Length: 428
Ligand code: HEM
Image: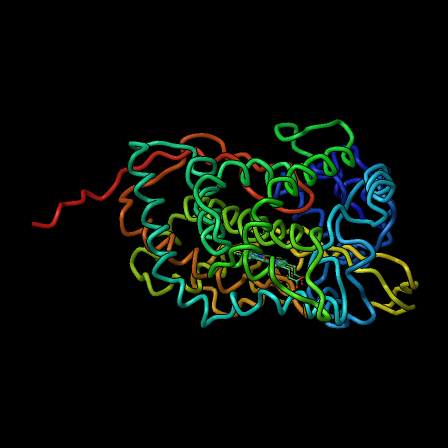
């Protein structure tokens, strides 16, 4: 029984609040709700009105326990929170629970084989080889900031473009792909944000967007099969599993996963990280004084912004978790943002600290599905903030920040700022 949350719930039941996009787009409400869940009902059977029921798992230790047992807790059956209407519509059209078949929605040997296809590109040594190019793209982003002339919407003018350019460079897609991928990825992850909606039915919306994305990727995959190049799009298009080429659906889904996972998350972290620095001037000052803290600061930004709000796991057999009897077939909502504020793991979890040294957050997940792009994300964020702190002299908020409306992935969609650049003298 959860008590004392009337202001947070705003008339919703606890179960409806756990699946309410208004709660997710207001971090204070979200964290108040989940702090109470961790305290009073950490593994909670949840029956929200428009969704099939699930267990809400809010503690760091429990999410870790579940995700470290991939044979007992599967990804395949249900990956993310969609309404019953959307789940039924998607199943009727595709015959599966997901609009696409991805590395995230597979298990066991199939998952390992799919992950293997691209994993070499995301290992620390490979990412180190990309550092110069990433730094160039970071520099270009701060040039763009300078061109805006002292004020801009950091989220939509700068943050969304930077990681998009990096991931498209890795995939081998040029600048002409940027605006299409950006629009489609916003529509994929922001299906509950009115600004992105293509249909009042969530299921219809997702199916339409995915079809458009696959139509976009089809000629790219065909081209890379005929003329392979040194890029990730070619590696995926020509990959084989069990001696067979990947089918089109798997190739397009792979492109989509890499493009979206590699972009929305990191842009949300750069905007959320900048906001955290603006709201905590003493932390900004510490970082300016001691730039070597940036490695820790970037990890703290990821914990603080936690751009991925959940994934599901489904129990393959009965299991007891923190005294609750999970039955085979039950699904469990892994609440990463809640784990990132777990007071049993983090000292002063609701403080943003650029020098937080012990920081075993779960914003990148854990276990065999742990984020494939985590090294890349950290390199990107480090390059970006190195450039920003060196070239922007003064920076402040210039209006209200606005969070995107999502239950799944994302962060700030508006971050109005005012700033002055360090005067740059041309070399003579
Ligand atoms: C701050 C940035 C990022 C965050 C917070 C983040 C978070 C996550 C999370 C929570 C998962 C699920 C992990 C699990 O189930 O245990 C994941 C998976 C994944 N991420 Fe990231 N991610 C980020 C950046 C990236 C980047 C830059 C890429 C580049 C390609 C990427 C690619 C992937 C892929 C491919 C998976 C699926 C892995 C699998 O199922 O085996 N992510 N990420």
